[in-house]
Length: 358
Image (tube, rainbow, N blue to C red):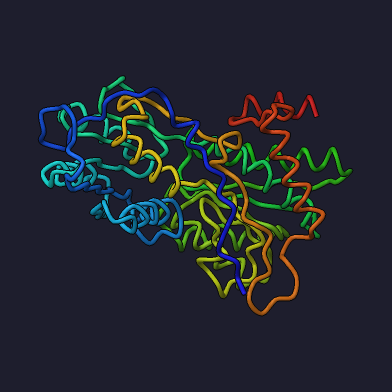
């Protein structure tokens, strides 16, 4: 049986940024919130949509968890194009939400603008920041390079051809974290294990074009890549499809994609960003006043906010998809990241320096 109880170390300590009074609900005038007041949270997706098998879906899982607790009423608005961002955020404001979540860095400018225009509403955004030091916006970012480094190390060790690939969504500082963390993990494995694994990466310039993701992956597979990793949202679903059809190994992102795609045996692990846990903890922090309502929060391995899934045995299989020894090495890498022995690069310049020091 699939064990769905993936280890999720708490990171509330990272969120305790000062006991400041939370803002009142949207449309309010500030001050304290009554204990019995209905808590309403709405998230606005980016163009990947609620079923992107990635961070939008995982954020929604966090809101569903809040609702299951009994005190919260939750909902979502899907953005089908970038012009929907402001419209949907304004709808959430009109709906009187306690907290409005924007999902994805592409919404950064829109949510900063809407938050500035609505100072009595509390906003939060995943994968972007409070750029203007607004008192009512919480930016939540992850050190995505850290799990990417570990899965890069895994990819290099699991490759038989000596060629691995990466499919990116849209080129940005955020996706650079995934790409150069992954590439650094490959080079670290090459040095430490005496391997000669080569890297190939390409961007689709979209988070929603699964057909393009599949086409890019198919070309990489034709070139000999036998382990592929993506940071591409819905576009990455196409990469996963290509790997499944070709019978090569793939690595998921954000959530454990092997549990979403239960019939896909190609997925050997995933680079987790615990977006669902962040949504739950920040939402609680806004209400109980343990989080600064106008702040930026960064989370990584030290806070237990990133990782890889437990090395489970899936239904119909007799062994975990990673060798136990390699899984243990991966966990040890996270410990070295936590204690500062390994500082993972998040861009090309830092990557170039990192490889010189291995």
